[in-house]
Amino acid sequence: MEAATWKSEDADLIAWFQEETNLPLYPFRLKQGSMVTDCDKFYSSLRTDIKEGPKAPRMLFGGLRSDLKALQEVAKKLKYEER
Image (cartoon, rainbow, N blue to C red; front, side, top):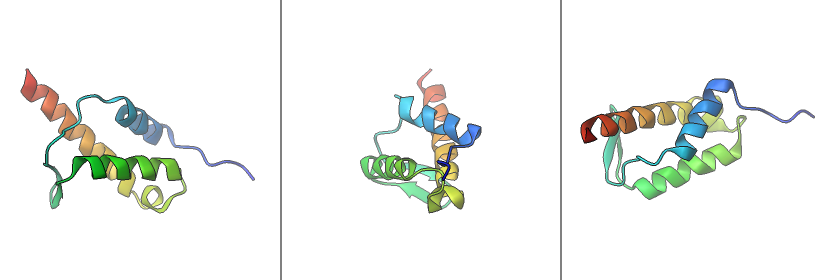
């Protein structure tokens, strides 16, 4: 049985998340209708989703990818605001 591998775009998002040092440490709006109130729990949950691999439900149904993309946008805005 062949091991599942991440798609290139997903692998890039995961690498970004694992290496990013400018993630919010306070409550923030992730996207419309989605507020992160406990950053530690949110980041821990993303790490768990990543550990479950590319065949895990949150990856297959787009939840993990969507959250990582939204988080990346939030982090970009934070970097811009810090200038």
